Length: 139
Image (cartoon, rainbow, N blue to C red; front, side, top):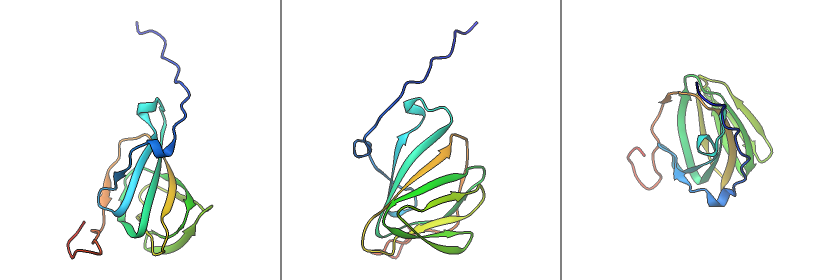
């Protein structure tokens, strides 16, 4: 018979100490997984995204994954099911599962936003390619 489940430990991490990784099909966009399964969080992940000026994450959707987001700094265009919305620092966003979404920084300063998602198996369906400003090929 298995023993009692270990109680998760509290964790404090400095964002700048977490390595940033490029966002798969994005251009000028990075992600840092601040808290997740490696830190013992059983139910959700906390990530921070950064998008440089002229950077973007192309349109995509997730079959079962919802997002809760908070813009920390900067301004960007968030497109939800084809409707452009200007969001900026302090704005909170809910993206239900199945809603297409993309992010574009049209400004001159970086954008950072926090993103909380449930821990779940999910698929990402990319609905467009991302073209780099310096190239004419998909990113």
